[in-house]
Length: 597
Image 1 (cartoon, one colour):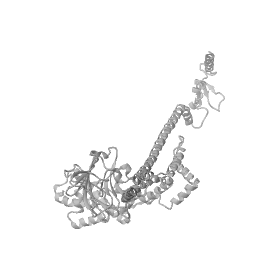
Image 2 (tube, rainbow, N blue to C red; image 1 turned 45 degrees about the horizontal axis):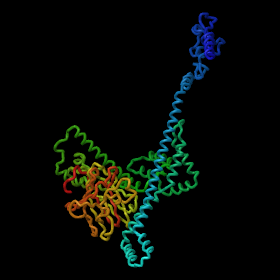
Image 3 (cartoon, rainbow, N blue to C red; image 1 turned 30 degrees about the horizontal axis):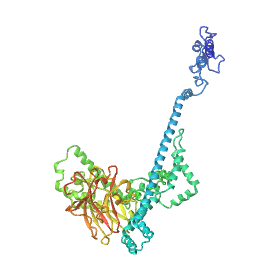
C-alpha cells in the first residue's frame, strides 16, 4: 500500500514538472532541456526550439530524464565530441542478456570439457591397465611353458618318493636333451616377446604429454585469441627450467630430430620449393620444434618417406624430367580433346598386335599407355626412339601407378614394409628390374617380418604369385607367408596369426586342409625353388595356395573362421635363416577366380 502511494506521488510530481508553462509561450510546457554553455536559459518549450537557432543534438526531452533508469543512456548528454559513443554506450548497456548467455555457455563448455576429459583419462587408464595385464599374461604363459618343458613336478615326485630307479631319472633328463632345440626356441620366443612388451612401458612420454596438456589447458581463455606462439614459449621456458630435460635437449641435438627429417623431405628438389619458401617453412617448424620433436616416430617411417630415386639427380637432370612430364601431359591432353570431339581417325588407332607388343614394356617400365597419341609421338615405329625412351625410364624411374589393367586382371603396384618387431631390420627388400619384389634375410638368424604397404580390401579377390628360394645349407628354418592383422603387424610374429603357410613344417603354422595332391611343404629338402599361387578373398574367408604352373598340389585353411570379420589384414612374409628369400612375381586383383584350384 505504501509503495502504491509512493508511485502515485511520483507520477503527480512528474506531471507537475511537465505542466510548467513557458514564460514566453504560455500555451507550451517547459518539457525540453537545452544543453549549451552559451545561454543561461536551459529549460525551453517546443516553440523556443522552433524560434531560435538550436540544433537537434543540443536538446533532450525532460520526460526521458524523469523516466531514466540505471542503464538508460541520455541522448546527447553529457556532451561528447564523438556522437558514435552514445550509440556504443546504448549497445553496451543492452549487453546484459548476451553476457548472461555467455556465462551459461562458459559453464556448459567446462562441464562438457570436464566430462570429455574424465572420459578420455578413464579410457586411457583402462587401455594402459589392459596392456599391463597382457604383459602379466605373457609372464604367466612363460611360467606355464617353462614348468611344462622342465617337468618340475616329475622331478619333485621322484625325490619326494625316494625313487631308487635311476633309469627313470636318466630317461627324463635324456628326453630334455632330445628336445633341446625345440625347447630353446619356445623359451627364447616367449622371453623375447615378454621383453619387447616390457621395454615398451615408458613413463617419461606420458609425463611429458601431461605437462604439455596442463600447460595448454592453462591457456584456455575466452577473453583473448589463442596464441600458439605464446604457448610454445611457455613450453620452452619450462624445458629450460628443468635442468635434466635441458641436458637431454642438448644431447638430442647430436641426432636428427623430427624437424630435421621434415626439412630434409621438404627441401627435396622434386618439391620445387624455392629458397624463400623453404626459409619461411624452416622458421615455422623451428618455432614449434619442441612440440614436434616430442612425437615418437620410428626410423623406418622416415626411410619409407624418402624418394631415393631422386637423391643423386642434379638440377639439370631434374629439369629434364620436368620437361618430359610436361610433354606427356600435353600429349595426353591433346588426345582427350580429340576424343571429346570424336575426331580420332581409324588409321590413328593402334592395331591389336601393336598393343600386344607394347604392353609388356609398359608393365616393365611402370607406365600405362593411356592414349594413342603418347604411343604415336614417342615411338612412331622408330626402334631407336623406343630404345632411348626405355633407357630414359631406367635412368629416371619417376612414373608411379597404383595399378594397371591387363585384360581381366588388375595388376597392383605395391611395396613391402619392414615390421619394427624382432629382427625385421635384417631384411633386404628391393624391386628388381622386372618389377618383381625380392625379400631376402641377411646377416644372421632371427625372425624377420614384413608386410604389404596397404591393407587388403574385404571385397576384392587377390591373386599373388611368388617364388620361394631357400638357402641350401639350412633345413631347420622358417619360411612363411600369409595374413597378419593390422593391430599385430608391429608387435608379434606373422605365424602368431594362425593364417600362414610354412615351407618348413607339415602342421605347425601352415595350411593343413588338403584339397588336391600332396602336402605342399618340403620339410627336409634343402634347395628349394618353388612357385606358389595364393588366392585371398576375405569376404569369403578364403586363403588357398597351390603349386604352379600345374596346380598339382592345393591346400587351404583348415578352419576359415580364423579369418575374423572385424579385423583388417595385410599380406605378410616371415623369414628366419640367412639368405632365404621370397620373390613376389605378381600381385593382382581378379574379377573372378578361374577353376584351376
